[in-house]
Length: 449
Image: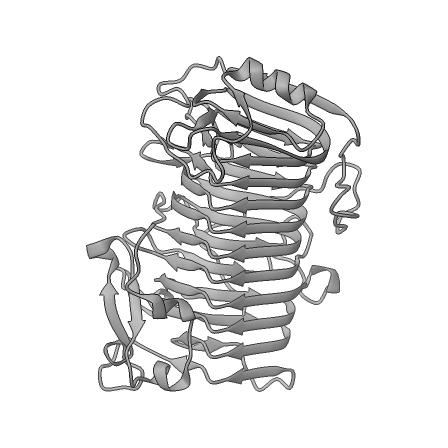
């Protein structure tokens, strides 16, 4: 049996909440485990922890809050705490710029309470976030700023959503910090929750950007993730996951220490994931280090155990520029669609097949692999429940062979020169004739955000 080797062991994420039976998801999106209905405990206090570069200080950060300026004006942490204690649902709190310290909320509201920056050019900033037992909160156009302190572990998590539901964070910046010149800590951790949306936000300078598990109805859309040492997104035990229109790029790690995946779905917590959609994303090595791109390995679990097999996974219309064999690698999925992805090899110092990204599928049933642009597809052995059709195979090693890059692509931008890659489709090539690959490449050259 074929197995995939990893550069380093999986880190465990998404632990099962104490008292829960392993393998069970949330009962409903409106009643996550541990959520206390109709109660509220609110704490907002300025952080007193000292560090070389205190959080919410230094370089100015701007956001893009929608509807900024509307709502009750809040000028400081004390006013915010008082307003939250009075809130019943439907309020909008417009925060003046400045350092609001630590935000801890344990509350349920009948309608969404929105906390937003009054002016996105001078946003409100928080050094810690802890939402626990929360229902109906919107955080819009805020800065969440972490400052490394000696003794903080790689896994330190200053920003946490736990046992909560109906939470949205939008148009915000999760700004990490460096330790010995590389990102440190986890940008946002989401566990034991339901109906959480992270939208149009930036994550940078982290060990891992967004992690979590044992959660249902999680949406990650329109986010910009870069300067990450290890995983961009890493989850386990998710029921209903949408990863859409995000840009992950320019990762960089410590050689011999960091294992990098742009997106990883794991089983290390003993939970499978179901109803997963990964579409319209750009995964770009840029000027950074190579990574595994989309990886859904076995995490050492038995793929003959039906409770460990992921179900209903769609990986569609993504663009990958990378230099590792695990372009799209999937193990143990029932009902799998891999369609219209463009997977392009970027050269790195180490050669060989390990540097050529491909589609790899193991131990899966009811599989469709259609209209992708890729170097090769592994795992197809004429299984009766697989459909593999109209894929455009491309390569950059032999100019005389079919599918050579120079005949298939127009090079609008390359990473070493521009910091990002943009390859368009050359008319008349195999990709063009088959109408294969992601529709996103048809928009190049595009303006960068």
